[in-house]
Length: 158
Image (cartoon, rainbow, N blue to C red; front, side, top):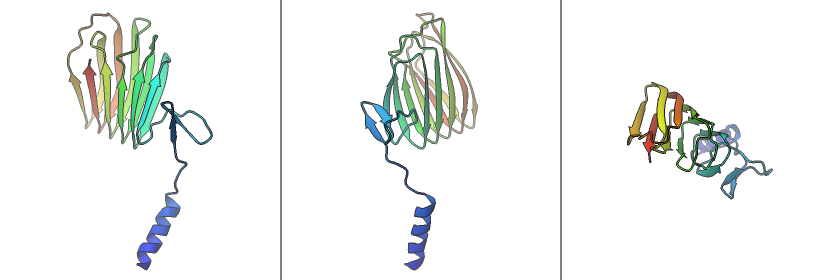
């Protein structure tokens, strides 16, 4: 019992609790009221900018992109789960780019089937799955580039 008590105290000293996160109106907020882009245990956010960034570490996050002029999406996932819905987004110019970095986690992208989609992702000990087929009716090009190491990238055409 004494060894367990000392071990518990030691681990509590090493791994101190961080401030708890609160979710207000779909945005993840710290105690000081500043908006954060990183995912918490369960995080749902709506993005309307032409450029946005999302980072998830050891958690899960769901993003809904409602941009009228999408240009760049920078998505990073490490040991977590990230789901991004592009179905309400519009590409303003001829193309938009999604830069991804997926390590030891699962990233799911929901892409409109009307977009011409080019997947330029390198994988290391992981897999890339495409569900459905893009029709490319709109002529807008969506480029997915980056890398997936020991993780799973799933692209679903909706």
